[in-house]
Amino acid sequence: MNLKKIIGFYVLMFISSTLFAQAERYHLLVGTYTSPGKSEGIYVYEFNTENGEIAYKSKVILESPSYFAVSPDRKFVYSVSESKESKINALSFDAKSGELKLINSRPSGSAGPTHISVDAQRKYVFAANYGGGSLTALAIEEDGSLGDDIQDIKHEGSSIVMKKPYVHSAVVSPDNKYVLAADLGTDKINIYRFKSQNRPLALVSAVQPFALLDPGAGPRHSAFHPNKKYFYSVTELNSKVYAFEYKNGRLKQIQSISMIPEGFTGPGHGADIQVSADGKFLYANTRSTVNEIAIFSINQSDGKLSLIDKQPSLGKSSRTFAIDPSGNWVISTSQGTNELILFKRNQETGKLTVTGQKISIDKPSLVKFVKMD
Image 1 (cartoon, helix red, strand yellow):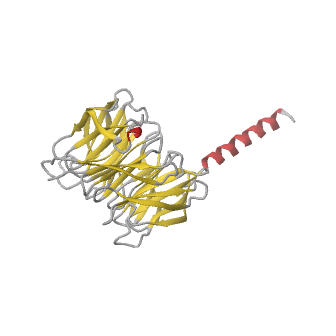
Image 2: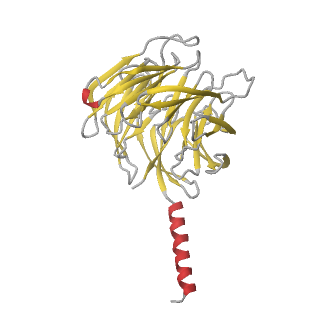
Image 3: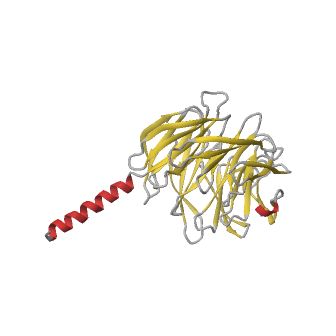
């Protein structure tokens, strides 16, 4: 074989391998509100990272699984049922077919579970009970089912806006030693030390029991930076992003930055927050009269944010959004217009562009990508 043919062969191999990598597929899981409405539970789609195509695969019937968490081994999914019964559900998950099956359910401890997370060792799930104003720690058995041991921690206090606690999310720290719970009703990020071996009382207040935000801020969802040194929280009531230095269960606020236009007096209702996998950009959205995804660059030396762009979310009442694992796409839920909306993402600039691609689904509340076997 001559030199030209050899070079051509390797070029062809490179192009083929590149195209193959670009066409990687993922499961896309979508949580919904089922009452009132037409949705029936968690829906599973197949997502093509090359062209952003989304194809329906299956569903599992559950009552208002508005939020769920996928176990690190991808064998289980744990969801809330944000309904009158206020349950936590354990489901088996087939990472090849995408099939979900209900294993068992347990009471969430308090009313209105709105967020759930699972620790890195799959020993516990943590549910934020918005209606009941509490944080629940529920033990997981070896087979992935939910056990009977439950710890329900009632929060106390109020704010200049809210009259009682409203726990909205619970995030596990990267070292799996702490749980940080955002309480919209008390303007606090409550910090708990987590020790799974101390079943059933796996959580205790940390040395720094909480970080206090501005009066009337209303923290909602939070995210860690990939370098594990910074922690960010989006607020629902004053529509800001708060940046913190994080170390060993301690938070030190370094910045707060608004997501809504200067002088704007209407509600913004900050909702969700995501940090890109490379740690260069942070995204946070509003879901009321503004309906935008704010895009911030992250200073790699101090973790501070700079607003670089705002992308209209196109739909209404977008509770959550997600960046796909390739980093090339963002999918936003639109509870108000009953659809998933796809944006193209520029990994160099962080900016988003409209693709026109949408998927109709009644009252979507959460989207998550899961690697496909």
